[in-house]
Length: 289
Image (cartoon, rainbow, N blue to C red; front, top):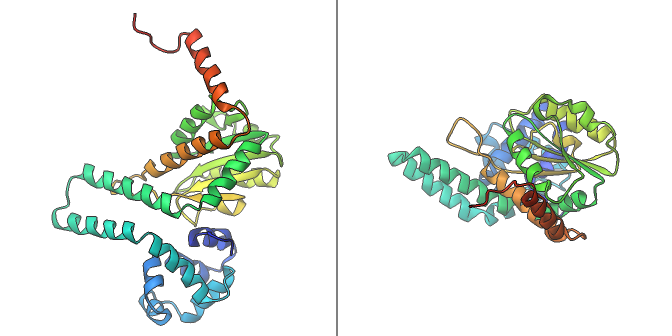
């Protein structure tokens, strides 16, 4: 298993090839990491109606030497985030006592998502993402449903310094036309959260078939687009509301842009200054009389 790869990433990379039984076991492992890290194999199996043999087969199917090796990866991740988990437990206890304001609970969920995203996102994966974006001939951005807004914001930021970044499928535009001509030198940057849009899955598949590098940002190892991704980033979107929270996703996007500007071999700051000057000349900014 690659160094610093999370269990979510390992499961996502093999998920499409797992049997139904092993998929169920993988879902349980990802959703119950603390149990895996702290309970024996027999106790975990009994608690979740799984046979020890199924968990052992799962570990082998995921590329581990055995169950203990898989458990050690999960244990290390849990230890790194124990502070976050204890804070969540404390908030849950307080919620159970008095529920609290929905505004406060929403804010707490967003903060927890950001903490988890920061802790669980390997920096090597960020570096790989930025390397692909910096070296791409063309970057096509796409997001459907709730993800469309955050992708538009990413396109807005990139517009200041990256003329080779385009937004696909905007306002009814043909997605197929946006993907036409993509090849090995290009990148499709895809943002999708559950429930996953069919267009997002098909876009990832089409771009990969054309040889383009696909970057998938999602909230679940079960995302069907992940199997087509060269790089996948997993971002928590938990929320007490009826909708997913994009707060951690927004932090990730802004962090990627900042890292890209710092790592780019070009003087992107100069290009941003030129764009700002153009906005001033065109009267885009309000100036007090």
